[in-house]
Amino acid sequence: MKTFNVPSREEVSANNQTLFDNLKKGLGKVPNLYATMAYSENALATYLALSTGKTSLKAKEKEVVNLVVSQVNDCDYCLAAHTYIGKLNGFSDEQIIEIRKGSASFDPKLNALAALVKNQVENKGKVDPALVDAFFAAGFTNENLVDVIIVIGDKVVTNYLYAATKVPLDFPAAPALS
Image (tube, rainbow, N blue to C red):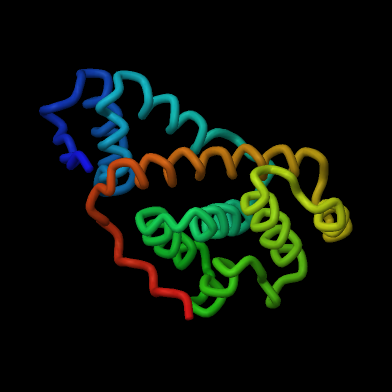
C-alpha cells in the first residue's frame, strides 16, 4: 500500500497553513490525521466545520459516539485520540473500555446511547427499533438523534481516512480490548 507522509505546514496551501496555525494554537499541535486532510485544498476546512459545529450533544455524549464508532471500525488512530479526549472529559480508563464495547453501565443515558450507536454502525445504518425507543426513553430528543447520526458520519470520515493512509499515531495508543 502507498505510504502517506504527513505533510508539514510548508508543504500545504496557504489556506491550509492558516488552519494549521489555528489548530496549533488551540490544540498545541496539528494532529497527523488532520494534517493528512490538507492534501486536499478543502477537506480540512470542511471536516473542521463539521466536527466543531454546534450540536445538542454534551461533550461526554459526543465522545461516547466517537469511541463506539472508532471501535466498531477498528480505527487505531481515532481510538488513541478519543481515549485521550475521553479522559480529558472525565471518563476513567475502565469506563472508556466499557464504552468502546458498546455499553456504559455507570450511566443509563450513556448506556442507551452507546448501544444505539454500536448497533447502527454494525448494521450499516439499520438500527434496531427497540434501541431507538430505549434512546428516547433515556431522555434523548429528536434533535439528539439527528446530531448523533451527524457525529457518526464525522467519525466514519476519520476512520476511513486512517484506514486508507495509516498515518503514524501521535496520541498514546489505546489499550487493546480483552
